Image (cartoon, rainbow over all chains, first blue to last red; front, side):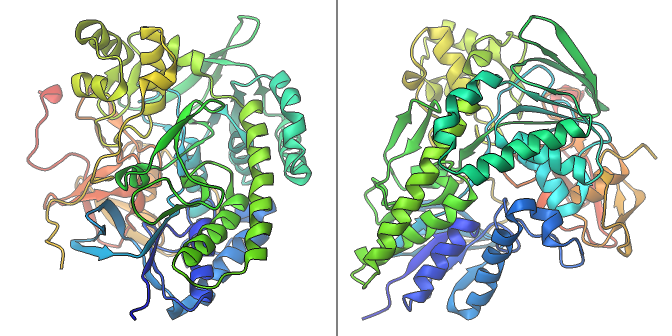
Length: 458
Length: 103
């Protein structure tokens, strides 16, 4: 009998650990990675000719980053690694890939998606100006290229990454103008019981806050973003926010890093016809899977890491292993059931901590509802909040895919990655119904633009 | 030349390379992405097709597609995930394309 073919999409912490687990069972998984080198975004590696040590790049997570890289490098020929390759569709029993001009359609017996996450964004006036970057993007600039996104940077949004990246910038010698968090300090107190699931991680977070304050950088909580100011040609000149007491504060800056936690990249799970369910705590639709990562889908599909639900890099390693063991077990191969029990327990702990983070740094959905009509909602094509509201008034479109068809919201270059969640909130608020009823933008193939010159699959 | 947007904080002793942006020769470093090479030398990457404004990228991880630039033959490059190479020549507007916003 031919060896079962396991395909793993993504080579971040979840994908690497899944690949190791499948290879350890004696199979040769195909690992498809958009990156040039394994590591994913969180453990993204710098180019070969860069010399900064692990501690500089990954801070408290340096050992984990090194372990993931070393684990991957040790796999060698025991996996079939395809770097710089995009999976652009899952259909007709095949994974459709594109790399340069080459295209392939690969059949599979089990498919493990470890697609990772991108920043969750809340639009605001001026976020289309040059010099505005996603928070994760600002971290990539530093980690992978040793540059700051500007000479005076404002960090705006919420979530642990806000504090992590701001403190990394300070440590690297960048000038940070301010750290502006939409979440209130009291929310953090409420979330403490869940955050105590991982005391050491909680402690790391507190240490980051202290480091930012010790550097003399203004750190404000409970803010409402007002506008990013600047010139459409030359870019950002400053940021204004409103404090809890109604007072406005302005910070001069030539760059803004914005992010409100992360959102899973679920387009491929969607194309594989996985069922999605609404998550009340984080106000978004997430793919449905069981405790081991088996997706509720008509194909042998497994989901792991932040691409299924944002639980962080440590959880991704455990859920990557667990999903791979589940896949192997379903293929009829012997697996260590004790290891699966331990991994489930570990993932459960990370789940509790992630609930705490969601409570401590909530998605400020009321900000979307309050956005002015002339605020750009879709950065790609400059569709405004008012365009979407008027579309609803004129067409009666009370769901995001309908609104997309009529207004082009979510139809631009990023395919709704950065406006989709806010658009759903704008639609729900304008229609005065729960955001779950606004639905979610359906994933479309190709999940990212393909070059026109691409060939037929071999 | 205009002031660069990105600020180099470390790894500044790499060998120099040169690329051409809209015909202007610009110094960059071996290992730079095209985006970093362009934004360490200038303020923006391209014109927006939908407004009068310019763009300078957004996500740096291949998800937003905001950082497209073009080779002189019209081949599209995603600047954040393309490695800058010595002698590379790029344009900040799509060759042969004109968008109504720009008249």
